[in-house]
Image (cartoon, rainbow, N blue to C red; front, top):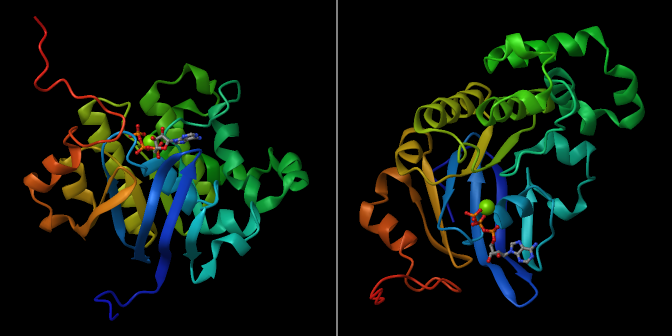
Length: 265
Ligand SMILES: Nc1ncnc2c1ncn2[C@@H]1O[C@H](COP(=O)(O)OP(=O)(O)OP(=O)(O)O)[C@@H](O)[C@H]1O
Ligand SMILES: [Mg+2]
C-alpha cells in the first residue's frame, strides 16, 4: 500500500502477538512507523503498552508475528551492539543505578555500544565525560553531576534517563510513560524536552502516555490499545474525545470490575 510518508520505515510490526500464560497481552498488532515520526501509544492500564514497547525494544520476543527495525528482522539483531544503535528505551520503572553518581549513570548509555572491557576502562575518559556533561546540561542537570542518583527527585531521575539516552544516541526512542510520575507542569516540560530532542535529530519517538493534551501537542499519530488489541491508529488531530472515552471506558475491559451501577448501601 502506498504511504503518504516518503521516509524509510523505522519500525514495522506485522500481526504481532504476545501471550503470558493464558493472558493474551497483545493480539495481531500491525503498523509501520517511519523515520522521524512521533507516535503515542495510549490505552488503559493493562492494555499492552509496556508489552508492545518491550517487544519493539527486543527485550521480549513475540509469540506470533514479526518486527522489523530499519528494514531488518529484530530477531536477527545482536543484543547490545546493533540493537542499542537502533533503539533506546526509557522504562516505566526507571533502571538507573541509585548508588552511582548522575554522571556515571549517564556514561552507562555507552555500554551497549562499547562492550564491557572498553566501558570499564573508559568511565574516566575525558572526551566521553565531556559528552555526558553536555547531555546533562541539555536536560538541565549541569549542577548535579556528582550527586548520588538516589538523592534526585523522580523528575530529575527521568532527566538522567534522557541524558543517558542522548549518549546512547539510538535511531528510535521508545519511552514508556516517561512523565507518569511527574506533576502536570514538569510532565509537560519533560515531554517537550523529549520531543525536542527527537525532532532536533530526526529520531523516531514512540511513547506511551495518558495525557491527551500532551499527545496532541507533541505527537503526530496515535495508536490506541485496549485489551491487547489495536482500537485505532490515526493522526492525532483525527482522534476525537469520544474515541478516547471509549478507549478508557472501564466497561468491557478484561479482569476489571467497574463500580458503575453498584449498590454501596
Ligand atoms: N511478565 C508478565 N507476566 C504475566 N502477565 C503479564 C506480564 N507482563 C504483563 N502482563 C499482563 O499483560 C497485560 C498487559 O500488560 P502491560 O504491562 O503491557 O500493560 P500496560 O498497558 O503497560 O499497563 P500500565 O498502563 O498499567 O502500565 C496485563 O494484563 C498484564 O497483567
Ligand atoms: Mg505499562
